[in-house]
Image 1 (cartoon, rainbow, N blue to C red):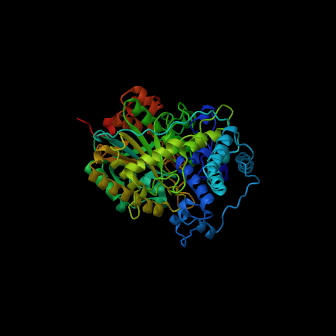
Image 2: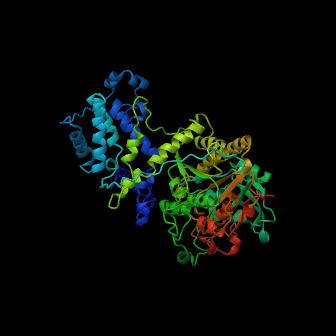
Image 3: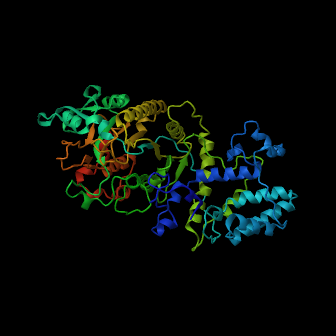
Length: 598
């Protein structure tokens, strides 16, 4: 069990019930919902909050957990310790003994149920004694020990810990690069299932004189977009579709412009697939469950339907493949679901706050951080230890060190008033890629609120306005950096939505959808994939309003992997392990999605 179990574990929880973390959990074939909400950023915040509670009492100072105390100058705590007495509450613990070993034993009983391992007890007792020998007041030594015991794995999990006494690897900064060979892919995940068939709509000049818009309007009923509101785009002969003209949602103004300029394309009716299938055989050919957020989200972000790489994500495997090619790689996730796609075998990735601030471990400057001691009590664990304790310690050291390094290169970014906190942060990371020694980088960010079971028409207006604004600003800022040709933005969702309306003027979870991608190297002005030529239930690819994808996500990932620099079949199989389950025309090379490089 774990303290993280205080968060309810259900369909709509921030926890992911089927999450497969790296390490011993994965090796044992187990899942851990608690691990899905853990990352070094949250760990540092928790330790900072508890340290502030110990030192300063119940206050919001230095990331504390109290209410705002605007009447107190937090920075004055260093020189005016009596200010602690003005807080709403302070810790008044007084041990029954003054002997360091007895104090640690007593705290271990109170805070870990007596489970604190022998090595951590020894380390804490010795540190307590060293403080006393250095003429520190007993109260200061006690607070120091209270801060340190909140770091040990037993404080954060309810199992036993058997220390191995082997240290964990830290973060090794890379030497700067020239920046001339940099490429990045930014994935903007529309969390909840975007209604892609209201983003890209059949318009006119359709095959055999068929009025596809009329069929669309009939099937979509109240949720159909008026034809005169659609932004028309032409389909080139190189990627023929059921109609020569399509319409974009009226809020996708910049998307239309970029399409016409040759910097944006669509992929029609794309989705997660085990094999190509239809309404008769889909159940036999689909090795995953559809229609559920937690399950289909995980499958889409992992792209490993046959579980050849348990616990690993498709973005992480792409970084692994690029690292094998000799590139210096890095991944950045902004948002809670990035762990699913960034999990890798051997590639570094960083969890970032969407506030634009890098987490600083130990913000109270007058308190000695004791990093060496912290890492010694979170060392690797031996066989028989609680797996939760290993999760707590894993990544903590490297996370603290990497945050400090990247902060030294990027600095805290003031994101107030920016068009998007997440994308402004990504722009600063791209701008500093050379100083960070990165040649290939993947960013994952997300926008919530796409689960539109009610009033989908008005909800889409607001959301696509925000998407188009991000697209316009990101393009402008990347061009200003001279990085537009080196960056690809992929805007996608884990699944689509049903064509038919539900009882709330919304749509329920579907399957196939339409996505779009943009960048200076994108072969734009195309609609790739195959848009359905029949939107009714008479189609072999429509079941009760649910559209079965006809283009696998593997096609897109294969092309992106090649553009990023993966050249070998082994590398491409690592990225998209199921790609060979599809006919060769679905295994897109880089020239399908991207301009040919001289």
